[in-house]
Length: 267
Image (cartoon, rainbow, N blue to C red; front, top):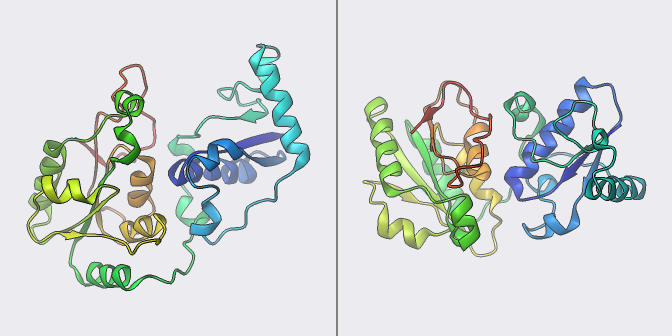
């Protein structure tokens, strides 16, 4: 038996769901999901089945009780094999499951739902579909500006974005850039990209519409963000030019996750 804890924002939830599916298909064990209410609520709740055409398992009281017991054992350092998620034989998996060996079938497992796009988003999609080489540029700021997050995650610089844009243009001179961000005011004031489209959703339109639109682009310049990562990873253009920040975390003690395909460019 194994229990995957679902938590965090949409990007992390996708990693966790992929590990759930990976284990379901490869382990031969009973695999369950525990919905971590507190850590899901911080990021808008369970977003997976709103964004993707999937059916999540129902919440189980038995699984919830098992997780409480396992976390109690973890708090007093008893029977670590049950909750040490670095071990293949553990029961409780409470990490963020960020490893590329779990995500090779992500596109198959996570088809998007059919969305009713706002007029603005539908127009952006139409422009993307009409371009020879549309490139999504994602700028993550928002909660990264909180002091603790700034120290741990950091922010991608304008130099990073301009260098990445220049690399794309060297390979694809006809590229057109589509700018996505949770701080579009900053983007407009600081990233000056010729003929770019600033993608702004209608008020109340969910964030995952940005994720959907990013996957419709052919190339990607991502931020140090799992949401951003999936905008490139779930795109269908094999052999696309995808660029990611080599310095994934500001905290020097944190390890860069092994999630990036070999043909992506670290900058």
